[in-house]
Image 1 (cartoon, rainbow over the protein chains, first blue to last red):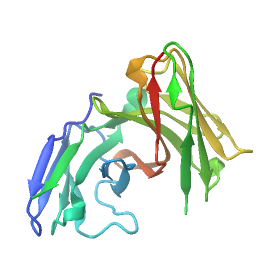
Image 2: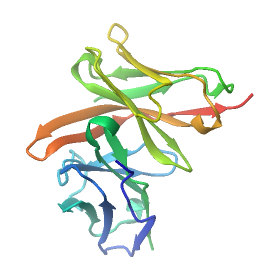
Image 3: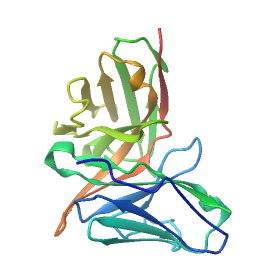
Length: 106
Length: 124
């Protein structure tokens, strides 16, 4: 399976909502990660729409067809980061990542 | 709280073998799956391999011929070996706990937590 497709960039003003897409997943399940510069990725969403303990309610996930999306509501300056999606890619490739989306809070 | 710490040589010469270690605390390596993932500025995140302590392993097809992942339950560590390295293998290498669930829609994979990563430079 080819890499998942994400827009290279997204932006929004504080308080607004931004949605990042992830296209090309053949699996029903997608997870999302936030990465600040120089830091390790952090799990934000798993199994499409579940949030780990400690992740704000402002982060939500959905999926329609072969496109998954993560929405960040009520944007805060601290949400400015890179975001990656990933999913199971079948019994040959096993794991596939998206190319990442740089979210800018204006 | 699960903590993961990667360690490695930092600098490796071309054609040599890279050996990395992931030390886990707060969880037993026998209770979970574990993955190695690397990140380069040009290629983003790339999954390398994952393992269960029983010896079940899966590899990225593009790296399979050069990679070996292993678990040492006595030390609670996960290791990665990458042979014949080139400049293309320069990256930050992460170790992560890998969750796998089987549901009605197939397999669900996610990684949590990740270690801080270890930078690998390939140069003579």
